[in-house]
Length: 550
Image 1: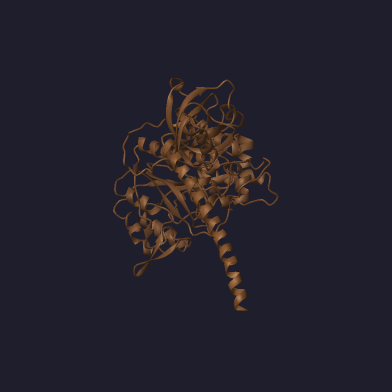
Image 2: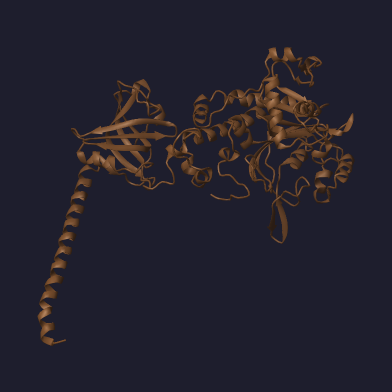
């Protein structure tokens, strides 16, 4: 290239670069001016709107927040309140902004309009707050002329004076609460269960999920309260053990220093040993681990066990009497939580649980009454403890007979009832006796653990029992063998080696109390009481063969 041409092109290049730099400088100056203007506005209105200082325990009880649930109290009308809530929705319309604020299942509409001490900038700020953010709102509680149907507080709204974000949510959510709250029968997008479980903290914000776990908490509360009131002592047994706790293969094996250990399948053996320490009645609430590759709607590899064990004087019916009173107490108290039950039913419709026979049905069928020595004339020998409880008990053999009224392939008295027939049995019981809850007793020896006491009148059967809700088992129990020689003999018959749990057998050698008990699966009780289709809906962070997170 000619050097004169290069020299001639240089000024043009320099001018082009100069124009580009000038535009860049102008843009930067404009951005700086906007930032300074915004900073000035933020400073000017920082007491009215904006980001609140991070909560870092620098103040203590300097302000009083009113819970969203209490906003409808008459004395708050026309008063200025401070609330902290989550932003459900927000929209800006001209010089006005509207929000729905919520905390749990309680919600209220909030609005603001440009006037007096409310600048337009605050309206703009409200309109751009990301949904699910947490905000502090200072507002006046106002009565409304027309009911607001989209919020739980339908007769009031908040007129916002000040609003500050406490924490801001990401703008892209894993799913919307509207989609996650939709009934299966409704039109519109649904969120599959795995997606919901992967962001369980988000799923818990839906009315139904939040209500399910509040009800689960109540089941534990009432379980404990009843047993404590009836002289039971709460215990806490170890979950790391040196051998499979019930002689089975379905246990999790783990390295334990220079040897192997196992996760307990249940507190069963420890409950029994504690009773031999002269503690007459015990219960436990704790985790239970089952290494079962069962990918069904009702199985988990870890769940919460509610376990009971107690002395008996003569008969395992003494345990059943306690169990019936316990479940009656739990069911009666759960029925008082109408708000939570309604929230669940809106997404997962279910019929209220029926757990007692009516006196009329008992008379019609000839149901026996054990406490009054009334012998049943019912075809399937159904009976109840007394006229107060009226909770159905049917012998296992008679359950088989009831099933055989509809099965093409008849079952023998000692056949195991599979899951399909278990559900069918629940349906038949409901049709005949009008109850969702029943107890079946005297199960075959072949399907019960080695520590189960056999029936003296027929060794094919045992002094054992299961409890059912809506055709699915929620609890299993029995009178336990308290004689060490009989225990060893039954274990040998079932090919169970008791050498690794020698201490368990030894606990009966120094004078043993006759006893019995039962174990209950918490998540399954909640699932079936609420008529849910999957136990994972009633497990906070479920564990199954496919899931170990979050």
